[in-house]
Amino acid sequence: MRAEAGVTLIEATITAVIVGMIAVFLSVYYATANKSVRKSRDMSIAGYLATGLMEEISARRWDEETDGSISPSLGPDGGESASDKGDFDDVDDFNAFTELAVQYPDGAPLAGYAGWSRSVTVDFIDESNAPSAAPTERKRAVVVVQKDGVEILRISQLFAQNA
Ligand SMILES: [Ca+2]
Ligand SMILES: [Ca+2]
Image (cartoon, rainbow, N blue to C red; front, side, top):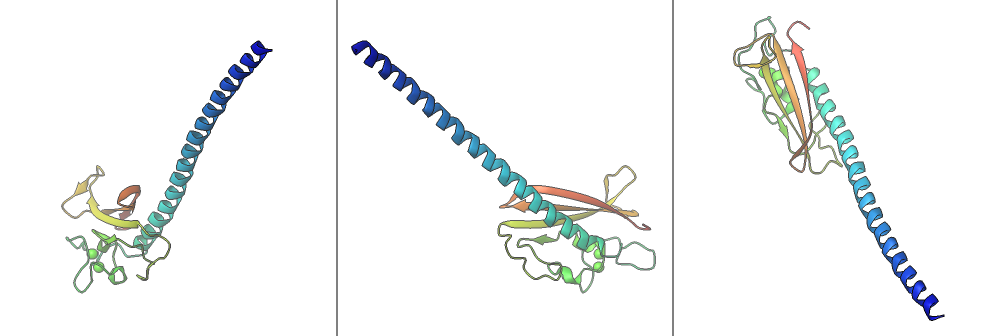
């Protein structure tokens, strides 16, 4: 009788240890799964925000100049405000543009994206796909999307003068 009670106590202890180990395993498993769900949700939001802004850039003409010459300076031109994308009429006006709060194409705030930001750089690109200080017939726009100051996604697109 006493021996049987002893075995039961050992069994109970072993069972408690096993249940404890399973609990630890499950909590680690769910934490990891949660993190990966959050990560994939962030990635799809970042993709939406990046492609949205790239579409806005694509909608502009290739250069400030319309006579086939190339404006040597990248960025907004005379009379265009660097902080108001509604002023932008060519692709490189977006160079150094930053949206600390995400906006619609018309500049109105886009609700529900607290902590998200977008920024753009535009470079002239040479034949070897490297940035060029001198004007070339190709510009590359890079859109970077951040969440809470951490880069989530960057996409780039080439724009050729006679495309
Ligand atoms: Ca312009
Ligand atoms: Ca420009």
